[in-house]
Amino acid sequence: MIDKNRIPQHIAIIMDGNGRWAQARGKARSYGHQAGVDVAIKTTEYCANLGVKFLTLYTFSTENWNRPSPEVAILMQLMFDNLDEEIFNKNNVRMRIVGDVSRVPEFVRESILRCERNTAKNTGTTLVIALSYSSRLELTEATRAIANEVKAGTLDPADITEETINNHLFTNFMPDPDLIIRTGGEQRISNFLLWQAAYSELYYTDTFWPDFDEAALHAAIEDFQNRERRFGKTSAQVQQ
Image (cartoon, rainbow, N blue to C red):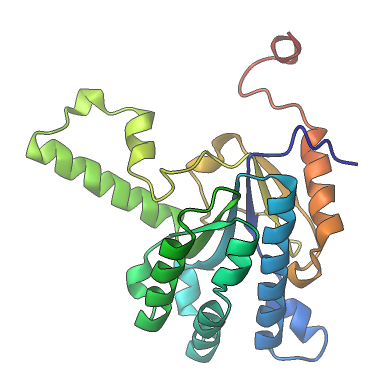
């Protein structure tokens, strides 16, 4: 029983548990990754129907490049095979990518950029795929860009504000996440949206990502709606 008038504007999800879900069924990890892709597509449709403005999916971290090369190759191929513009356009979903896509294979990168272009005019949910993403990398790149502006004399260090940093992040086109969900039983952020998560509500579930269905999403949103978001204020101030 969720209140559709108080849907989180931005939901971010750490999709964890694909490999363990597959291994528990005697299957290869790739079987779990394919199942995870199917759930990602369905979750995007659920969020579009609910009116969620931004959905960010932690798809592949910079640390994931350290996984066995056959698994990385499978993950990249799955990304290429499932960038279905027809599904996005049917649901009025705009797709964006954040991360260091220079490390992504060229055939995947070209498909991503094409999908971004061909969904750019959609006005519903923006699906943000965090691919080859690391929050520490993001902050390092932002710091380097700001330092170069100071060096060039176009920015006074005294004028650097939180907004300055926000404007140099990969995510400068969207608001901070209201709700961050992590599946798979782990309870950590794993280098995901560290700056942006300052006042996000965190929701952890033991459900593996391939089992995360519409009811599980609704449970997370209902839990979010039952929390009091104070942003440093007292409860009395919030109530007023």
